[in-house]
Length: 286
Image (cartoon, rainbow, N blue to C red; front, side, top):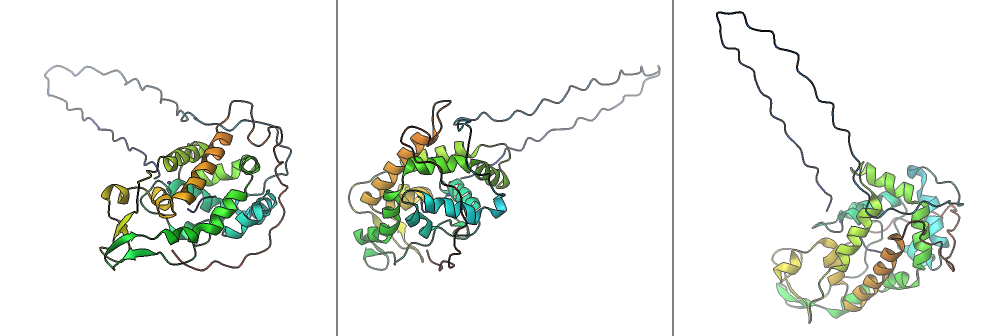
């Protein structure tokens, strides 16, 4: 569904200043000061939720604990229409936590490889030119063929229904990431909007290699987030597929009150979770 999960918001620390009372000497007795009146602490207010998922009766099976969710969630993904191809791309360990962390990191400058929820993109990064400068080779698009095919095959309504059913685990993982008062679906929508805002420059993308890794020659493109640069690297046709699927998912998780994603007429039901077979560890790669 996506290669890697966006910048985290840093809380603002409010520093208070302390005042010292100095007593001046007087010949007359110092009057007794009344005890200070302490104002009651302001109640903590939860931030407003911008994109709440609708509250509906969920007849699906009970959720496992987050730490025990990998085999159950993987099995449910495999039961989605077109889900087998997606499951083959996923890393089988700590999956929901890694999805949440990757979503949260996509708008950041870099992504943590150890938190990657999907297997590495196969093949070498291809360029046209010499060792210091060149252009992005169009053949790079073929590296993403398997992932794009899996994305095309997915039933997005069924996927959004699965997401809603397992949402409490996604929310818990987001809170554990350091956002105890934030709402993960708001973050997901913001990240989708961020990715949809990726520029689409015409022509071949110029590259430079100042050190070890290739960079975009255009400073404005190089300053883009890791998620947006991924869309630029995968080629225009692949990026168009990703954008179209992201728009579909966004429409399903940003709904009118009382409308449940994945519960409209013709929607595939949420698959019952079943244990997934153990998967072999993925190889390391960029």
